[in-house]
Length: 260
Image (cartoon, rainbow, N blue to C red; front, side, top):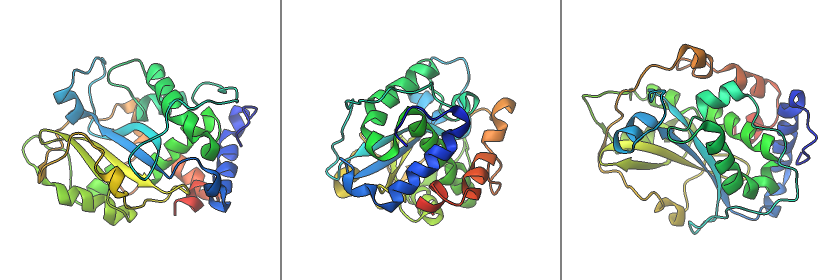
């Protein structure tokens, strides 16, 4: 699975095979303890940080990254790799929509995430294409927009939500409470701890204290712009699985099995 010889048409199959290996026991060989799946809420982020992109922030969660972690809150980074990095990130349209940078050009953001975090995930997830495919699959599987909508939490400029309700929205949908990162009352990111077989787990105490900007009892999810029409297929309405998620689940293995 780690080979860089996977042709683009076979990337999903290679990814599913690799994730099946994870579920079958690769966990013992992993040089770290868990993953953090980090999504950002750009309307909150861009109200407190200068966003340099022309595209406005949208009322949806987008990817920041998938990060290997140790139980004590430390993490490996910039790991050595003997593999060819492989082709550029797959599914470029999907990447631009779901893994958008609001400061640097998207490819620079993706390169940063691969070099700093993806190289360290390589023993479990495989090469660069597999790392990006896996993260996109997890974003679909653990859809934060759908979890929020199911709990009646929608973007608003006029109301706040109890932080515990945001935590419970994720827990009710996926079985484990996440971590919240805020700036003032504005929700900036949601971090989900995942086991090495990619299932949501409670965050270990050492990881749970990591977000530098803690949230208070109330949080705001300010409104952003609607998702652009070109990206609409990657942000299906709540209750409707995306085509990517349907394809992965229909394969009968990989992420659908490991993260069920």
